[in-house]
Length: 130
Image (cartoon, rainbow, N blue to C red; front, side, top):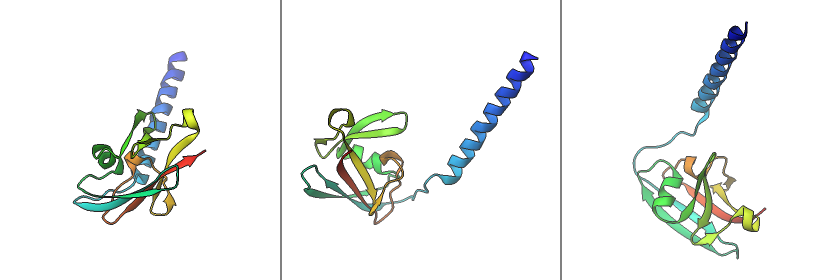
């Protein structure tokens, strides 16, 4: 009797994982192959803005910004947490601030490491007090 319950629980867990994997695969952002040019505007804590232009074959924003040294952070359970942008720190635990990502004018719905890059894209990283 106990073995049947354990088998049923294991099957249920596997089914839930399969469904979640299917949902992720169906809803993940599409990427674009080839060379893409894009801009990133950094809005610092004092309100000053600085624009950066990049051209890359990479598919995701975070890969480019890390390689170029514009951002630094730490990998966590939900992806890359950005702590430093253009030399300025925004560390929630220390100052209650974070770097907000905007895709175009919209607040980003994915992390910097899972945000796809398209030719002509524009992004903002904005110092934000929580």
